[in-house]
Length: 68
Image 1 (tube, rainbow, N blue to C red):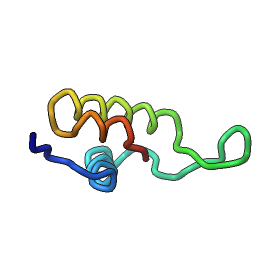
Image 2: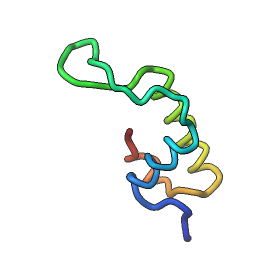
Image 3: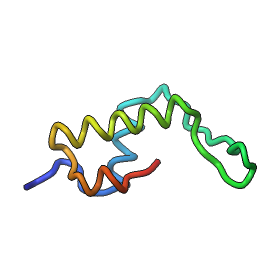
Image 4: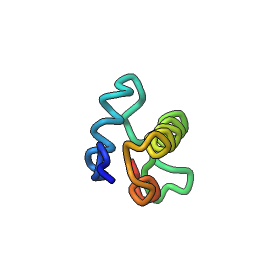
């Protein structure tokens, strides 16, 4: 099957193009050991990835490994 998006980099690029108003700045996580995006951004990404996989734009394998 041919998918429209085939790499994690392309997933991230299209996500930010689709949602330009979401916060791109990473904040320090609660443990202070790393950085993460705000909850609204992370939830939007997960929901968007699920939608892409369901409509056949990305493979299930890419949906499982894609990260911001």
